[in-house]
Length: 453
Image 1 (cartoon, rainbow, N blue to C red):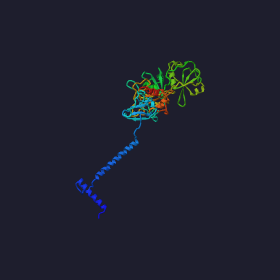
Image 2: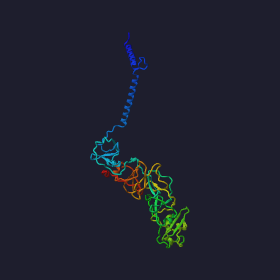
Image 3: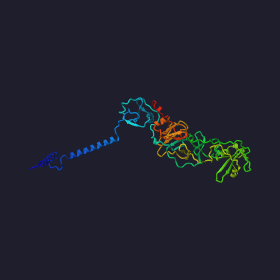
Protein backbone atom coordinates (compact mmCIF):
# COMPACT_ATOMS: atom_id res chain seq x y z
CA UNK A 1 0.00 0.00 0.00
CA UNK A 2 1.45 3.42 -1.07
CA UNK A 3 1.73 6.06 1.55
CA UNK A 4 0.59 9.60 1.00
CA UNK A 5 4.25 10.70 0.78
CA UNK A 6 4.93 8.15 -1.94
CA UNK A 7 1.93 9.38 -3.89
CA UNK A 8 3.17 13.06 -3.62
CA UNK A 9 6.67 12.19 -4.85
CA UNK A 10 5.22 10.18 -7.72
CA UNK A 11 3.00 13.11 -8.69
CA UNK A 12 5.96 15.54 -8.62
CA UNK A 13 8.08 13.14 -10.68
CA UNK A 14 5.32 12.78 -13.28
CA UNK A 15 4.79 16.56 -13.36
CA UNK A 16 8.52 17.22 -13.97
CA UNK A 17 8.53 14.72 -16.86
CA UNK A 18 5.51 16.41 -18.48
CA UNK A 19 7.01 19.92 -18.05
CA UNK A 20 10.40 18.74 -19.41
CA UNK A 21 8.69 17.19 -22.39
CA UNK A 22 6.82 20.43 -23.10
CA UNK A 23 9.82 22.74 -22.40
CA UNK A 24 12.75 20.75 -23.84
CA UNK A 25 11.02 18.08 -25.98
CA UNK A 26 12.58 15.43 -23.81
CA UNK A 27 10.84 13.92 -20.76
CA UNK A 28 14.22 12.73 -19.43
CA UNK A 29 16.10 16.09 -19.87
CA UNK A 30 18.88 16.33 -17.20
CA UNK A 31 18.13 19.99 -16.27
CA UNK A 32 15.22 20.43 -13.94
CA UNK A 33 12.49 22.58 -15.48
CA UNK A 34 12.17 26.09 -14.01
CA UNK A 35 15.78 26.27 -12.74
CA UNK A 36 16.69 29.09 -15.16
CA UNK A 37 13.60 31.00 -14.18
CA UNK A 38 14.49 30.67 -10.51
CA UNK A 39 18.04 31.86 -11.13
CA UNK A 40 16.90 34.84 -13.20
CA UNK A 41 14.33 35.78 -10.58
CA UNK A 42 16.92 35.58 -7.80
CA UNK A 43 19.39 37.69 -9.79
CA UNK A 44 16.75 40.30 -10.51
CA UNK A 45 15.79 40.49 -6.85
CA UNK A 46 19.47 40.94 -5.91
CA UNK A 47 19.95 43.80 -8.36
CA UNK A 48 16.76 45.44 -7.16
CA UNK A 49 17.94 45.20 -3.56
CA UNK A 50 21.33 46.75 -4.46
CA UNK A 51 19.73 49.65 -6.33
CA UNK A 52 17.29 50.25 -3.51
CA UNK A 53 20.15 50.22 -1.00
CA UNK A 54 22.09 52.72 -3.10
CA UNK A 55 19.17 55.10 -3.14
CA UNK A 56 18.79 54.74 0.62
CA UNK A 57 22.47 55.57 1.20
CA UNK A 58 22.27 58.56 -1.14
CA UNK A 59 19.20 59.78 0.66
CA UNK A 60 21.04 59.62 3.99
CA UNK A 61 24.18 61.37 2.70
CA UNK A 62 22.36 63.91 0.55
CA UNK A 63 18.89 64.38 1.92
CA UNK A 64 16.40 66.05 -0.30
CA UNK A 65 16.36 69.81 0.09
CA UNK A 66 13.43 71.17 1.92
CA UNK A 67 14.83 74.71 1.60
CA UNK A 68 12.35 77.42 0.84
CA UNK A 69 13.16 80.80 -0.65
CA UNK A 70 10.93 82.28 2.02
CA UNK A 71 13.47 81.45 4.77
CA UNK A 72 15.48 84.58 5.66
CA UNK A 73 19.25 84.72 6.24
CA UNK A 74 20.38 82.71 3.22
CA UNK A 75 21.99 83.36 -0.13
CA UNK A 76 19.94 81.63 -2.81
CA UNK A 77 22.00 80.30 -5.71
CA UNK A 78 20.21 79.11 -8.84
CA UNK A 79 21.60 75.71 -9.82
CA UNK A 80 21.28 76.13 -13.55
CA UNK A 81 22.87 79.59 -13.87
CA UNK A 82 24.79 80.30 -10.65
CA UNK A 83 22.85 83.54 -10.20
CA UNK A 84 22.53 84.78 -6.61
CA UNK A 85 19.41 86.06 -4.88
CA UNK A 86 18.48 87.27 -1.39
CA UNK A 87 15.14 87.70 0.31
CA UNK A 88 14.68 91.37 1.08
CA UNK A 89 12.82 92.98 3.96
CA UNK A 90 10.09 93.80 1.46
CA UNK A 91 9.35 90.08 0.97
CA UNK A 92 10.73 90.09 -2.56
CA UNK A 93 13.58 87.96 -3.88
CA UNK A 94 16.23 90.31 -5.27
CA UNK A 95 18.95 89.36 -7.74
CA UNK A 96 22.39 90.27 -6.32
CA UNK A 97 25.37 91.32 -8.40
CA UNK A 98 28.06 89.42 -6.51
CA UNK A 99 28.82 87.36 -3.43
CA UNK A 100 30.28 90.23 -1.41
CA UNK A 101 27.10 92.26 -1.88
CA UNK A 102 24.98 89.29 -0.80
CA UNK A 103 27.05 88.89 2.39
CA UNK A 104 26.67 92.57 3.17
CA UNK A 105 22.91 92.39 2.64
CA UNK A 106 22.15 89.42 4.89
CA UNK A 107 25.26 89.16 7.09
CA UNK A 108 25.36 85.39 6.69
CA UNK A 109 27.51 82.88 4.84
CA UNK A 110 24.69 80.33 4.43
CA UNK A 111 24.28 79.36 0.79
CA UNK A 112 21.23 77.43 -0.43
CA UNK A 113 21.28 75.92 -3.91
CA UNK A 114 17.84 75.86 -5.54
CA UNK A 115 16.55 74.99 -8.98
CA UNK A 116 15.05 77.61 -11.24
CA UNK A 117 11.73 75.77 -10.90
CA UNK A 118 11.84 76.18 -7.11
CA UNK A 119 12.44 79.89 -7.54
CA UNK A 120 9.87 80.31 -10.29
CA UNK A 121 7.06 81.35 -7.95
CA UNK A 122 9.23 83.80 -5.95
CA UNK A 123 8.15 87.42 -6.42
CA UNK A 124 11.13 89.29 -7.86
CA UNK A 125 12.47 92.64 -6.74
CA UNK A 126 14.95 94.95 -8.41
CA UNK A 127 18.61 93.92 -8.56
CA UNK A 128 20.77 94.98 -5.61
CA UNK A 129 24.48 95.16 -4.95
CA UNK A 130 27.73 97.02 -5.46
CA UNK A 131 29.05 96.96 -9.03
CA UNK A 132 32.62 95.71 -9.08
CA UNK A 133 32.55 94.19 -5.58
CA UNK A 134 34.32 90.82 -5.10
CA UNK A 135 32.68 87.81 -6.72
CA UNK A 136 34.09 85.56 -3.98
CA UNK A 137 35.55 85.93 -0.50
CA UNK A 138 38.21 83.85 1.21
CA UNK A 139 37.33 82.07 4.43
CA UNK A 140 38.54 83.90 7.56
CA UNK A 141 41.13 81.18 8.25
CA UNK A 142 42.48 81.57 4.70
CA UNK A 143 43.45 85.23 5.11
CA UNK A 144 47.17 85.95 4.82
CA UNK A 145 49.39 88.73 6.19
CA UNK A 146 52.33 88.65 3.77
CA UNK A 147 55.12 88.62 2.89
CA UNK A 148 55.13 91.64 0.59
CA UNK A 149 57.38 92.44 -2.35
CA UNK A 150 57.51 95.18 -4.96
CA UNK A 151 59.72 94.85 -8.02
CA UNK A 152 60.63 96.98 -11.00
CA UNK A 153 61.56 95.54 -14.37
CA UNK A 154 62.86 97.36 -17.45
CA UNK A 155 60.23 97.53 -20.20
CA UNK A 156 60.15 98.42 -23.88
CA UNK A 157 58.76 101.91 -23.26
CA UNK A 158 59.09 102.31 -19.48
CA UNK A 159 59.97 100.26 -16.44
CA UNK A 160 57.11 98.20 -15.00
CA UNK A 161 56.21 97.75 -11.33
CA UNK A 162 54.93 94.43 -9.95
CA UNK A 163 53.40 94.06 -6.48
CA UNK A 164 53.43 90.59 -4.90
CA UNK A 165 51.77 89.32 -1.70
CA UNK A 166 51.84 85.80 -0.31
CA UNK A 167 54.86 84.44 -2.21
CA UNK A 168 58.14 83.30 -0.68
CA UNK A 169 60.93 85.86 -0.80
CA UNK A 170 64.37 84.81 -2.07
CA UNK A 171 67.10 84.13 0.46
CA UNK A 172 69.82 85.90 -1.56
CA UNK A 173 69.56 89.62 -0.81
CA UNK A 174 71.79 92.67 -0.79
CA UNK A 175 73.72 93.10 2.43
CA UNK A 176 73.33 96.10 4.70
CA UNK A 177 75.43 98.88 3.24
CA UNK A 178 74.78 97.84 -0.36
CA UNK A 179 72.47 99.70 -2.70
CA UNK A 180 71.45 100.58 -6.24
CA UNK A 181 71.13 103.82 -8.16
CA UNK A 182 67.89 104.15 -10.16
CA UNK A 183 66.16 106.73 -12.31
CA UNK A 184 62.43 107.29 -12.65
CA UNK A 185 60.62 107.92 -15.97
CA UNK A 186 61.16 111.68 -15.54
CA UNK A 187 64.93 111.24 -15.20
CA UNK A 188 65.21 111.87 -11.46
CA UNK A 189 67.96 109.85 -9.78
CA UNK A 190 67.65 107.99 -6.48
CA UNK A 191 69.98 106.08 -4.21
CA UNK A 192 68.15 103.04 -2.81
CA UNK A 193 69.81 101.43 0.19
CA UNK A 194 68.65 99.66 3.35
CA UNK A 195 65.08 99.70 2.04
CA UNK A 196 64.87 103.49 1.61
CA UNK A 197 64.93 105.87 -1.34
CA UNK A 198 67.00 109.04 -1.22
CA UNK A 199 66.58 111.44 -4.11
CA UNK A 200 69.87 112.70 -5.51
CA UNK A 201 69.83 116.40 -6.26
CA UNK A 202 72.22 118.20 -8.57
CA UNK A 203 75.83 117.24 -7.98
CA UNK A 204 75.08 114.75 -5.20
CA UNK A 205 75.98 111.57 -7.11
CA UNK A 206 79.29 113.10 -8.19
CA UNK A 207 80.07 114.10 -4.60
CA UNK A 208 79.33 110.55 -3.43
CA UNK A 209 81.53 109.03 -6.12
CA UNK A 210 78.65 107.52 -8.10
CA UNK A 211 79.08 109.63 -11.23
CA UNK A 212 80.27 106.59 -13.23
CA UNK A 213 77.32 104.43 -12.14
CA UNK A 214 74.67 103.88 -14.81
CA UNK A 215 71.26 104.20 -13.09
CA UNK A 216 68.79 101.35 -13.45
CA UNK A 217 65.41 102.29 -14.97
CA UNK A 218 62.69 102.04 -12.32
CA UNK A 219 58.93 102.49 -12.30
CA UNK A 220 57.44 105.48 -10.49
CA UNK A 221 55.20 103.22 -8.41
CA UNK A 222 58.20 101.16 -7.26
CA UNK A 223 60.11 104.24 -6.15
CA UNK A 224 57.12 105.72 -4.33
CA UNK A 225 56.43 102.45 -2.53
CA UNK A 226 59.75 102.70 -0.70
CA UNK A 227 60.03 104.75 2.50
CA UNK A 228 61.59 108.13 1.75
CA UNK A 229 64.85 109.23 3.30
CA UNK A 230 66.33 112.72 3.17
CA UNK A 231 67.27 114.21 -0.18
CA UNK A 232 70.91 113.87 -1.11
CA UNK A 233 72.00 117.44 -1.71
CA UNK A 234 75.26 119.35 -1.46
CA UNK A 235 75.41 120.70 2.08
CA UNK A 236 76.28 124.26 3.07
CA UNK A 237 78.15 125.13 6.25
CA UNK A 238 77.36 128.35 8.08
CA UNK A 239 80.41 130.56 8.60
CA UNK A 240 82.60 128.48 6.31
CA UNK A 241 86.23 129.59 6.25
CA UNK A 242 86.21 131.30 9.63
CA UNK A 243 88.66 130.39 12.36
CA UNK A 244 87.70 127.23 14.22
CA UNK A 245 88.82 125.81 17.57
CA UNK A 246 92.41 124.65 17.94
CA UNK A 247 92.98 120.90 18.02
CA UNK A 248 96.22 119.54 19.55
CA UNK A 249 97.83 122.95 19.01
CA UNK A 250 96.84 123.14 15.34
CA UNK A 251 94.43 125.65 13.86
CA UNK A 252 91.24 124.65 12.09
CA UNK A 253 88.67 126.37 9.91
CA UNK A 254 84.91 126.20 10.06
CA UNK A 255 83.63 123.82 7.39
CA UNK A 256 86.62 121.49 7.37
CA UNK A 257 86.05 117.74 7.50
CA UNK A 258 88.41 115.96 9.88
CA UNK A 259 89.13 112.25 9.52
CA UNK A 260 90.18 110.20 12.54
CA UNK A 261 91.17 106.65 11.70
CA UNK A 262 90.23 104.34 14.56
CA UNK A 263 92.23 101.33 15.68
CA UNK A 264 89.12 99.23 15.05
CA UNK A 265 89.31 100.11 11.36
CA UNK A 266 86.27 102.40 11.51
CA UNK A 267 86.92 105.88 10.16
CA UNK A 268 85.22 108.71 12.02
CA UNK A 269 84.40 112.04 10.44
CA UNK A 270 83.94 115.40 12.16
CA UNK A 271 82.73 118.74 10.84
CA UNK A 272 84.54 121.74 12.29
CA UNK A 273 82.09 124.26 13.69
CA UNK A 274 82.65 127.60 15.34
CA UNK A 275 82.59 126.11 18.84
CA UNK A 276 83.51 122.46 18.41
CA UNK A 277 83.51 119.30 16.36
CA UNK A 278 80.28 117.75 15.09
CA UNK A 279 80.30 113.99 14.34
CA UNK A 280 79.09 113.27 10.81
CA UNK A 281 78.76 110.09 8.78
CA UNK A 282 80.73 109.25 5.69
CA UNK A 283 77.81 110.12 3.39
CA UNK A 284 77.21 113.49 5.02
CA UNK A 285 80.93 114.25 4.93
CA UNK A 286 81.01 113.53 1.19
CA UNK A 287 78.08 115.90 0.58
CA UNK A 288 79.90 118.65 2.47
CA UNK A 289 83.19 118.04 0.67
CA UNK A 290 81.43 117.96 -2.70
CA UNK A 291 79.98 121.45 -2.29
CA UNK A 292 82.34 123.91 -4.03
CA UNK A 293 81.04 126.69 -1.77
CA UNK A 294 82.92 125.04 1.12
CA UNK A 295 86.36 125.31 -0.47
CA UNK A 296 87.16 128.40 1.62
CA UNK A 297 87.61 126.04 4.56
CA UNK A 298 90.86 124.81 3.01
CA UNK A 299 94.00 126.86 2.50
CA UNK A 300 94.60 125.55 -1.02
CA UNK A 301 90.91 125.68 -1.92
CA UNK A 302 90.70 121.90 -2.45
CA UNK A 303 88.10 120.23 -0.18
CA UNK A 304 89.41 116.97 1.26
CA UNK A 305 89.40 115.26 4.67
CA UNK A 306 92.09 116.46 7.06
CA UNK A 307 93.73 113.59 8.92
CA UNK A 308 93.82 113.92 12.70
CA UNK A 309 94.64 111.53 15.51
CA UNK A 310 91.69 109.87 17.18
CA UNK A 311 93.38 110.38 20.56
CA UNK A 312 93.66 114.13 19.95
CA UNK A 313 89.96 114.33 19.14
CA UNK A 314 89.05 112.37 22.25
CA UNK A 315 91.27 114.55 24.46
CA UNK A 316 90.08 117.84 23.01
CA UNK A 317 86.68 117.87 24.65
CA UNK A 318 85.40 119.58 21.54
CA UNK A 319 83.08 116.85 20.26
CA UNK A 320 79.48 118.05 20.43
CA UNK A 321 76.33 115.96 20.60
CA UNK A 322 73.97 116.33 17.67
CA UNK A 323 70.40 117.22 18.48
CA UNK A 324 69.04 115.33 15.48
CA UNK A 325 70.36 112.69 13.12
CA UNK A 326 69.99 113.95 9.53
CA UNK A 327 69.14 110.42 8.34
CA UNK A 328 71.88 109.91 5.76
CA UNK A 329 73.45 106.44 5.47
CA UNK A 330 76.31 106.38 8.00
CA UNK A 331 78.60 104.73 5.44
CA UNK A 332 78.63 105.23 1.69
CA UNK A 333 76.63 102.31 0.24
CA UNK A 334 78.45 99.97 -2.12
CA UNK A 335 76.57 100.14 -5.41
CA UNK A 336 75.48 96.92 -7.14
CA UNK A 337 75.82 97.59 -10.88
CA UNK A 338 73.46 96.39 -13.58
CA UNK A 339 70.27 97.32 -15.40
CA UNK A 340 68.05 94.32 -14.61
CA UNK A 341 65.11 93.95 -12.23
CA UNK A 342 65.41 94.98 -8.60
CA UNK A 343 63.01 94.19 -5.74
CA UNK A 344 62.28 95.24 -2.18
CA UNK A 345 60.32 93.10 0.24
CA UNK A 346 59.46 92.39 3.84
CA UNK A 347 56.65 92.06 6.33
CA UNK A 348 54.80 95.19 5.27
CA UNK A 349 55.83 97.60 8.03
CA UNK A 350 59.40 96.69 8.96
CA UNK A 351 62.59 97.41 7.01
CA UNK A 352 62.55 96.33 3.38
CA UNK A 353 65.28 94.05 2.08
CA UNK A 354 66.68 94.59 -1.42
CA UNK A 355 67.65 92.04 -4.03
CA UNK A 356 68.33 92.02 -7.74
CA UNK A 357 66.29 89.63 -9.82
CA UNK A 358 62.73 89.01 -11.00
CA UNK A 359 59.56 89.30 -8.96
CA UNK A 360 58.99 86.27 -6.69
CA UNK A 361 55.86 85.04 -8.51
CA UNK A 362 55.62 81.23 -8.12
CA UNK A 363 56.45 79.07 -11.11
CA UNK A 364 53.38 78.53 -13.27
CA UNK A 365 51.59 81.54 -11.79
CA UNK A 366 51.17 84.94 -13.41
CA UNK A 367 50.86 88.47 -12.10
CA UNK A 368 47.63 90.10 -13.28
CA UNK A 369 47.96 93.28 -15.34
CA UNK A 370 46.31 96.43 -14.03
CA UNK A 371 44.32 97.73 -16.99
CA UNK A 372 44.49 101.42 -16.17
CA UNK A 373 46.68 102.43 -13.22
CA UNK A 374 44.88 105.27 -11.47
CA UNK A 375 48.07 107.08 -10.47
CA UNK A 376 51.84 106.91 -10.49
CA UNK A 377 51.58 105.00 -7.20
CA UNK A 378 49.63 102.06 -8.67
CA UNK A 379 51.52 98.98 -9.83
CA UNK A 380 51.36 97.79 -13.43
CA UNK A 381 50.93 94.14 -12.37
CA UNK A 382 49.79 92.53 -9.13
CA UNK A 383 49.93 89.02 -7.70
CA UNK A 384 48.16 87.73 -4.58
CA UNK A 385 48.30 84.05 -3.63
CA UNK A 386 45.15 82.35 -5.07
CA UNK A 387 42.26 82.02 -2.63
CA UNK A 388 44.11 84.05 0.01
CA UNK A 389 42.65 87.50 0.59
CA UNK A 390 44.05 89.86 3.22
CA UNK A 391 42.83 92.66 5.46
CA UNK A 392 45.14 95.66 5.69
CA UNK A 393 45.36 99.07 7.31
CA UNK A 394 47.87 101.83 6.62
CA UNK A 395 48.74 104.14 9.49
CA UNK A 396 45.58 105.48 11.11
CA UNK A 397 43.45 104.85 8.04
CA UNK A 398 40.53 102.51 7.63
CA UNK A 399 40.54 98.80 6.86
CA UNK A 400 40.74 97.54 3.30
CA UNK A 401 40.24 94.10 1.78
CA UNK A 402 42.69 92.98 -0.92
CA UNK A 403 41.42 89.99 -2.88
CA UNK A 404 43.37 87.43 -4.86
CA UNK A 405 42.50 89.48 -7.96
CA UNK A 406 44.77 92.21 -6.64
CA UNK A 407 42.07 94.84 -6.07
CA UNK A 408 41.90 96.88 -2.86
CA UNK A 409 38.41 97.45 -1.44
CA UNK A 410 37.93 99.94 1.42
CA UNK A 411 35.58 98.57 4.11
CA UNK A 412 33.31 101.25 5.55
CA UNK A 413 33.22 100.15 9.19
CA UNK A 414 33.27 97.35 11.79
CA UNK A 415 29.67 96.30 11.11
CA UNK A 416 30.41 95.93 7.42
CA UNK A 417 33.55 93.93 8.21
CA UNK A 418 31.48 91.64 10.43
CA UNK A 419 28.85 91.16 7.71
CA UNK A 420 31.61 89.98 5.37
CA UNK A 421 32.58 87.36 7.96
CA UNK A 422 35.78 89.10 9.07
CA UNK A 423 34.68 90.59 12.38
CA UNK A 424 37.37 88.72 14.35
CA UNK A 425 39.98 88.48 11.59
CA UNK A 426 43.50 89.87 11.94
CA UNK A 427 44.15 93.18 10.20
CA UNK A 428 47.72 93.63 8.91
CA UNK A 429 49.43 97.00 9.20
CA UNK A 430 51.30 98.12 6.08
CA UNK A 431 52.88 101.30 4.81
CA UNK A 432 50.86 103.68 2.69
CA UNK A 433 53.33 103.18 -0.14
CA UNK A 434 52.72 99.44 -0.32
CA UNK A 435 48.95 99.78 0.01
CA UNK A 436 48.82 102.32 -2.82
CA UNK A 437 50.30 99.77 -5.23
CA UNK A 438 46.96 97.95 -5.47
CA UNK A 439 44.19 99.49 -7.59
CA UNK A 440 41.21 100.64 -5.58
CA UNK A 441 37.75 99.14 -6.00
CA UNK A 442 34.42 100.42 -4.64
CA UNK A 443 33.84 100.82 -0.92
CA UNK A 444 32.18 97.81 0.70
CA UNK A 445 29.29 98.82 2.96
CA UNK A 446 25.86 97.51 3.83
CA UNK A 447 24.33 100.81 2.80
CA UNK A 448 25.90 100.65 -0.65
CA UNK A 449 24.81 97.03 -1.11
CA UNK A 450 21.16 98.01 -0.54
CA UNK A 451 21.31 100.45 -3.43
CA UNK A 452 19.96 99.58 -6.88
CA UNK A 453 22.46 97.81 -9.10
